[in-house]
Image (cartoon, rainbow, N blue to C red; front, side, top):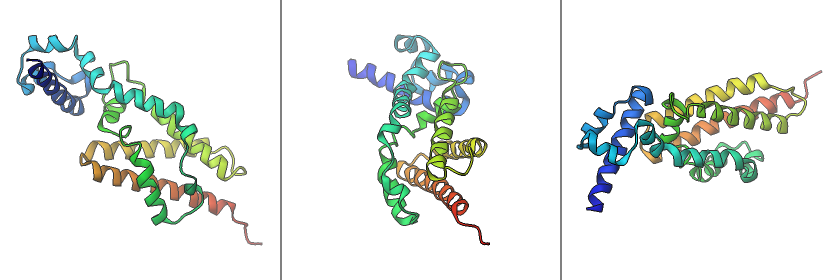
Length: 207
């Protein structure tokens, strides 16, 4: 009987994820979720207090994983080779291993947290993510080119465009291997672009 109950809960969670992805938290319907899960409204409340409790069950682990990543990414650091080479093949190989460790963070649940959570306690997650990306990008600019000004504005622009691209990949591509490859290429594109721009600004100007 316990297995049966677990199956019902899992079915509710599965259909809820699809519902929230399509409609967002505020417009999502418990009735639609329940119907697609093959159970009843009454049974739904045996598992979840309300719609927000259902949303929290879906995303809370990913939220905690992301916040752990936010608070510890400076200690973890990227592989040193990322700053030692501009060879796309070598960088791609390193990123494949490095990003693979972050895939639980770069999941569909992150899209729910950043793009479908309005009306919940998680609705500021996108701002947090954007701030992390922008600050991280700015740190690299300062490390690579201390004479190139503060660059806060360009960091904001790059941060927004990088995040939107990342979320587009997460939303559109469900195959995990393809998603990881596209995330790798997305990061590689921005990393090489940054290195190229900063490298160009560091070159001595002809007399």
